[in-house]
Image (tube, rainbow, N blue to C red; front, side, top):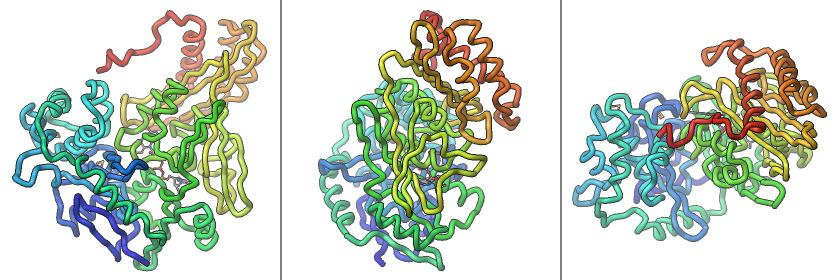
Length: 486
Ligand SMILES: Cc1cc2nc3c(=O)[nH]c(=O)nc-3n(C[C@H](O)[C@H](O)[C@H](O)COP(=O)(O)OP(=O)(O)OC[C@H]3O[C@@H](n4cnc5c(N)ncnc54)[C@H](O)[C@@H]3O)c2cc1C
Ligand code: FES
Ligand code: FES
């Protein structure tokens, strides 16, 4: 067994006896004695705990992403660089441009949220040239401020590029990447044992298969944006943990011409560009999935495997006709995504099976697709209702219709009765009215804090109507333009 090895800012740290579920935030504020990073909610919602993770890229440079340290487990830092707010200023004490711009633009009052904002903006500063205000809004979607207000912070974000700075982190990027690649070249995958609990970080599917056979009750960990909360909020003992982030076969995005194939451990941030290019509506929905901080960790496979009835990607993937590849003791198999979900918390995955990848067919000529997320807030909110529709018309009649819904049943659901009611019918108002009646009866949604049963039922039919209007009267304005919400 070897220790967890990572760079804390520029310094190599080796940690041997660590609980697999110790969070990076707990470690920073406790044993590491670095209290610049704050704790607000401990559930990925407020951004006070934002840190930046650096990983080497294929071309020997560094990629930096801001993440929530409150739901990130320390062993997953292995082979990464962890940058904290303490590291930003120059050796002679001069503030980093992000910090100086926050001071000059009055971007802080109580200051509790400030280190988190600074780290999100720092990741932006080292990754992208001069963003638009809309882009800054997206980047800050996971950082909450309750006293300053966002305008001065966004002003600071735009002004930070105007300051001269002679100590850019990326100047050391090649050297840092070399140091990390050396750490990563250790052929021995990380394994830890702490008070009877194990942590494994396999690097291949074969190693993962063997580990699952030996530890069938182990918890699979990907981005930890669900699993992290089981620890910080539910105080659950996860037992042994198997981390999926290093398994080579779970990575990669492959554009095969007629379909996209996305590895289960690909993050939503990594998948964003290709998804938004192929399915602009899906891209827009992903822009509202959690926050930038969440999407920098959350994985495509984690969302699907968690299978929450209010999860966002599944209704969309179901409407698009996506298939999920599973791997287990009996080898690999592939099923339509909707067949993964049987009942609340119950899936058709066999013991030892895990999600390997997703195959998403691209739209063919003549196919129309839309998806919609209804939530109380624009960013960082779980859906009350999510709906997605794919339509192909032939001679004015519905040749094919697929509908996926979230928030209206115990599982992510395909609306088969509504699909049947539409198929073969003319795509007109009378057909739509009938389909709305069928859809209104097809599910029995719950009432909860997000929405009442009646709201959800009505919303599903209204969203179907919206889709109808968008496909029959494209001149009718049905959407708020980005420019209007900036
Ligand atoms: C602040 C916040 C906001 C959020 N907002 C949204 C939102 O808007 N929409 C939404 O849908 N979700 C949201 N989520 C939930 C969460 O981000 C997603 O479900 C995410 O996709 C989970 O991915 P992960 O990689 O973090 O999974 P993890 O937390 O690592 O794992 C989730 C579950 O999947 C299992 N698992 C992971 N990968 C695999 C695999 N390859 N094979 C088998 N099992 C696997 C794990 O064992 C666990 O049961 C939010 C979460 C937070 C904290
Ligand atoms: S403490 Fe609130 S997001 Fe981490
Ligand atoms: S400055 Fe107080 S919460 Fe942001």
